[in-house]
Length: 174
Image (tube, rainbow, N blue to C red; front, side):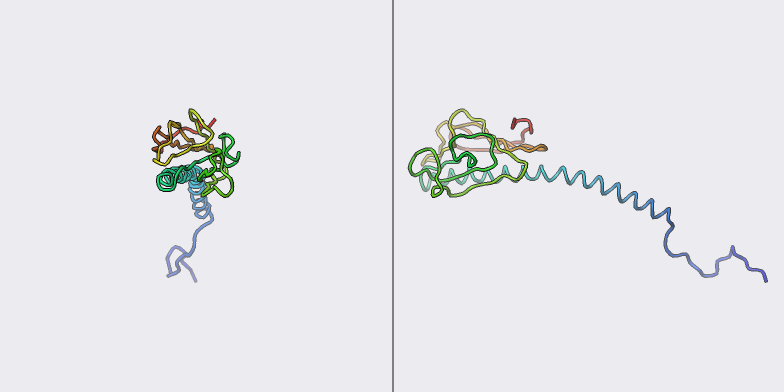
């Protein structure tokens, strides 16, 4: 009896070879490694963008509260409003006793920056940003820089208390 092995007899090969599996896994690993690098780069940029938006909202809220409730100030919460250096904590509140600092009962809101992010206020004068009852800041112009190792944003304050957000370089926080 002679069996012809070259003819197909209805048997279909199912599955894949080891070589096909190795090639497929290599392609998946390459795509995932590219995706992970892009993802790790995107998270710090997103954190800075979100922090800048939150701080901008805090500034706008302080300005609007000054119009409705009286003088409001924003200061460096890490230093208890005594100075304004590189910080990760902002306090906003009503300085009722006019001592230029916010006590625990005067703090209305605060904002803590994400890990790895810092805020620097480059200004011309003062240890805090103060809005008076008409919503103006009395010549306390300057810029808030929010930075980490990958991204930076700048909130520009003009002399009457209005602000806008711009892109900045991470080196601007040094």
